[in-house]
Image 1 (cartoon, rainbow, N blue to C red):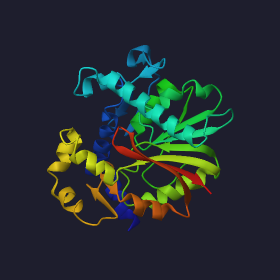
Image 2 (cartoon, helix red, strand yellow; image 1 turned 45 degrees about the horizontal axis):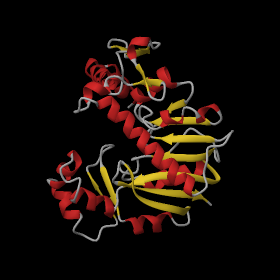
Image 3 (cartoon, helix red, strand yellow; image 1 turned 30 degrees about the vertical axis):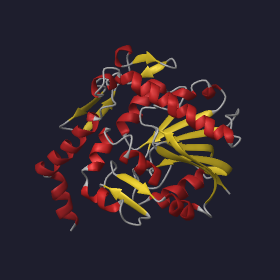
Length: 294
C-alpha cells in the first residue's frame, strides 16, 4: 500500500498535476505585478520583495492594487473600489457607534475575509492606537497585503475550515463584510469560531443576504449583474417562492447564500446576544447584524 502511494507521488503525470495546481495560484486578479514566481520543475515558489512599480498610493495614503483598474468594467474601477470600501467602513462605524463601540487604545480588531484590505485600509489612523489583523483564504490577496500594507496592519492566510490562528478571547471586534453571503455548509461552525476568538462582551459585525436583499434584487437592482444572474437562475427563482430557512445558489466559495432573517437570529440566540439589525448596510443591499459574545 505504502509503495503504491510513493510510486503514484513520483509519477511524472502526478507531478505535472501538482505543477498545474500551483501554477494557477498566482492568477489571483488582485495581485499587482508578477511577484510570485513558480519553478515548475521543483514545485517551488518565491515571493519577491515589493517595489514601487507594483502599487500606487491611494486614499488614505496607502498602496492600492493597481490591476483593479484593468479588471473592473468601468473606467474608474480603482476609484469605485476605494469609494465602496470607504462607504462600507463609514456605515459599519456608524452602526457600531450607535451601540457604543469606539476604537480604543490597546484593542485588537479582526477583518475576517479582508481580501486586499478594501475596508481595512480605512482604519489607517486607528492602527496607531489599536492592533488590526486581516485574514483571508486567498493566499495571493494576503501576499499582496503583506508586501504593501504591513505595517500598519498584520495579516495571515486561513482556510475554508472553521479555524482561526488566534487564541481564545483575543479580539474586541470582528467584522465580516459579505462573508456569510458565501459560506454555506459550515456557517454555524464559523459563527462558533468567531465567538471563540472574541473577548467576553466583544462584538461581531456580519452582513448577510436576507428577504430584504431579495426584494432589492427583484426591484431596484434587477438590472445589476447579480440581479440579472439571479433572474435567470432556476434554483433561485424556485427557492424564493418556498418557505425557506436558508438556501444557496451554487456550491463553492462563490456561492450566494440567503437566509430567512428570523430563522438565522433564532439559530444565533444562545451563541450571541443580537444587538442590532440594519438593512441596506453593506453595498446598499446586505443586512448587517451586530452580535455580542455573552
